[in-house]
Length: 137
Image 1 (spheres, one colour):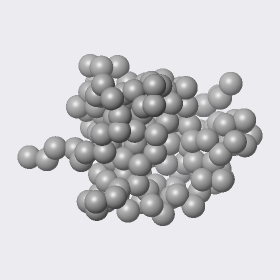
Image 2 (image 1 turned 180 degrees about the vertical axis):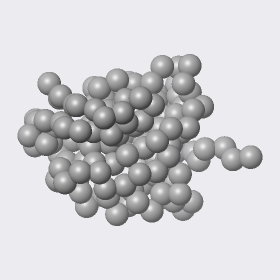
Image 3 (image 1 turned 45 degrees about the horizontal axis):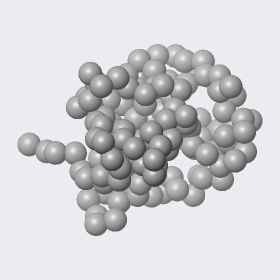
């Protein structure tokens, strides 16, 4: 079981880094006080450079390959943005439908601590992939 101690939206402590998830190279997402925190295991740290090019981050919940999943799109305004698909079991909780359309903080952590902060948008759709930017005014 993944344990997380929070200080508001920040992670104060987690045992994720020694978990089976981390040893297997799987991302994990924790949500607390309206803040989405992506935990990046050591094996996946090379993907950070792709994530940090994002101009916008969009989390979309839906069915991907028959499983309840979330698409995390790091939209860099290119034709091929960096995207990861996580099953909801890789989340400690998912946002309720009433929070669709919401903008919230998005933090990325490695074992060394917080490495990046941005904002993200939340939505859902029936079937993934969607990989469509957030609508702008």
